[in-house]
Length: 95
Image 1 (tube, rainbow, N blue to C red):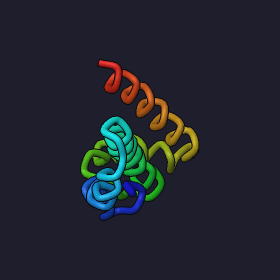
Image 2: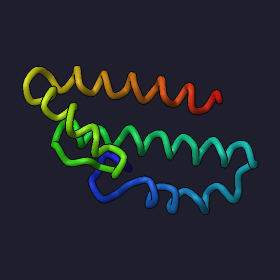
Image 3: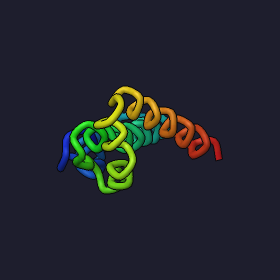
Image 4: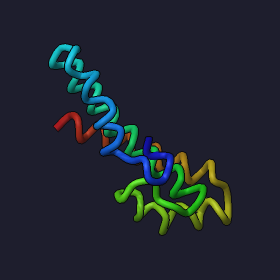
């Protein structure tokens, strides 16, 4: 959801919240957590490739990611973004 500008985290959580009522507590928390992390990374995709942040949190990614994608390769900028997102998610979920 975060990859499309304007369709961000809140809309994704709002759409998935009714589905979480029929799940167990652990499954619903994991569903909403995965939705959150996916929307956060998805916002950086449009920020890097188009220069338009998909979410408000991806606005800092435009400053570094978009020029790197324009000058060298968008694949390298997206790889940096997914690596940082994965490391942040591991430490964020762990602690």
